[in-house]
Length: 469
Image 1: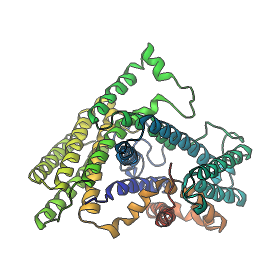
Image 2: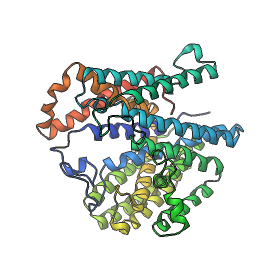
Image 3: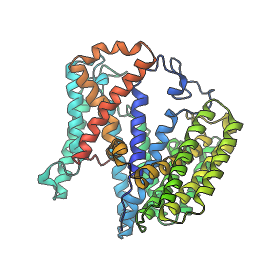
Image 4: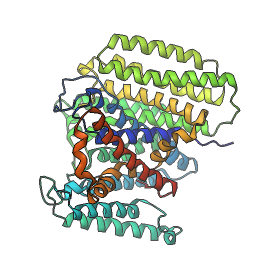
């Protein structure tokens, strides 16, 4: 019997919710661990600071979830015999859409259109949000639902309107008042690069995961050799369209490709036989869920506080304990969790061994330790969510994660294009100075704006208006 897995949606949902929260809090009075480790509150970027915070897990978890979706979005089509080169073209089109998304979203923020965030700029932002439904929702118009070419004509017109809008606006909230193709959302640009390059790698290593992993040493070699003169440096520096592509973005393959392995394990589990959960197995579920969560929390705390030896000791103890919990379990869940655990432990330990290299773990500029540690923790994240979402089926308590994860791109833009413009129009933002008055109020601002964005996202997920980017 085919099962439905919610853990992947929940992981993506956690990542996007944490991303919104971390970006909307007033950090003035908040402690350093509430911000990026290299950008403490009330301070500028400092690359000499090493360590990570929970905020530094947000983007790699999202990238990991992107890779984990490949077996469902690409692998299922390959199973049906679809042409690989057609799928490569589809991946290229998807990347182009994401590049447009990154440029359009950045230009349509109300404080970019107008530094004063007036009524006109707010209405333009809200209208841009509505226009994006025509760009990215495949079946929003029932009349076109069964007519592929009609749907793409509507999409094409929406993209043209979006470009005309961007090109003709005068911007007072950025350095230049004119449209600038280089002015884009860097996170979405990275996703666009991963949508193309990681997809191509997955397509041609389908059912050959070890071949997929063999790509990573070559990527690492180009990064290392690219610092010196020679043909490798030419490859590294080659950027024909710098506003859309840079080899530098491919460093995130170290997170996306391991994520594709987690997706394959998840895909295999979904198609395995179902079983009734016994009370004894429930105990194992609690234990492996708690140990997975503990591994994430302790690594973040000890790496941030630079208690490196203690972190390695605690990590090894938790890994050994988890190994003996999982070892005798031959159920479909047990086999699935053991696969996740094995590669999670490998990535995490490799990242901790590399911790001293490049000075220490750091998100900006990112280190190899950062890639492997966050990949390992993402494996434990999906293991933990598999326990609570798929094993114990705590659906009501995790529904906000799942629905947010199913429509993550709406969640990503909702605060800037809907929540803030609406609050500005009704004059609520006039009272936002109250959020500067202490630690609690600074956090409350982020919590309030995040909640509103997630409620909007959940609504569109419930009515099944999904953005397909």
